[in-house]
Image (cartoon, rainbow, N blue to C red; front, side):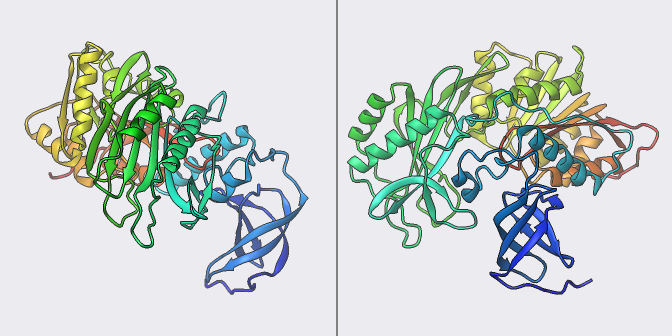
Length: 464
């Protein structure tokens, strides 16, 4: 049924919030026409003004609250709402955890039945602030001065920020120090409109466990940055053990380019996860919330229920952070990752931690898995932790042919998780447990750990 547009920009209404979208917007309806309003909670009654009207919905802004929810808490920083870095900060943390569980349930139930499936409460943090171990901060010129901050939501207008609240406070301090040194040396910020200037992003990675800091300066120009800049950074930030200049000459929204110059130390720093030491390079993926990564991986290992004589495959293994912890429980772990640099790190990490029952290979999971199956690899448990786009159908078919008893799926995207679970169910696997994990407090993002087991009675036969 086509919705009739019944409102115009700048009109005022009093509405009741009836739901939250997956992006954290409150939902109201005016004569059946949806209006999305940030910083609102179901049950609240608010006076709003209409900001934008489309054919199917509108966006509104709160002018005042007539009725507030008991779940509302004082906002820590309104800038976090404007930039979208903390869209749920107005919601009590216990309610954030409930929202994320409901989000996972709603999304999965669109594709698969959750009847008889154990749905755990979201595993949250004791302190849901200052948790990010990595920051990727854009650099722009504002009023003739180099500034660091974040973009206003749905724009490329930079809002200067010094305290991000969800990042490690030592990282926030490092960003300001580097910013001021770049200002002192009159380094020009990148101008994306005219594709000129030099510094595009400042990336800072830090381990709370080792206190080591890595700094990556993303530049448009390939000319090596001044040694004076490097010396001042290491003097002001003595914990900094690595400085890398990454060169990105393209007009693109992709943050990092392919070319690198090592300015100081080695291209690595170290963190500790579940008692193991990991080397992490500037290009390596490492979960941005170390404390919750331990919670996430511990749950994955628990659901995997690996026996000492079993063979495990870890797809999308990164630097081996899951693989090496699975190896404690398995006879052998076979792991794959498309980023060659990550595989180098994974092998190095295995050696550092004296782990020998793991085989790492670089390449696409959807290509390696079919080859391993063709070569006769039989596995007991499959662990997958894919990017947001989820699993390739060729990987799913090959993984089913390898006939694992259990599949543990670690997902950062409930929508692609739901799609892939349906495909596994059609191929004879039964959904057993779902556990949301809050890796990103104050945001709408949620990770999930899911257990599937082989259903020998209802398996569907496929030709490969």
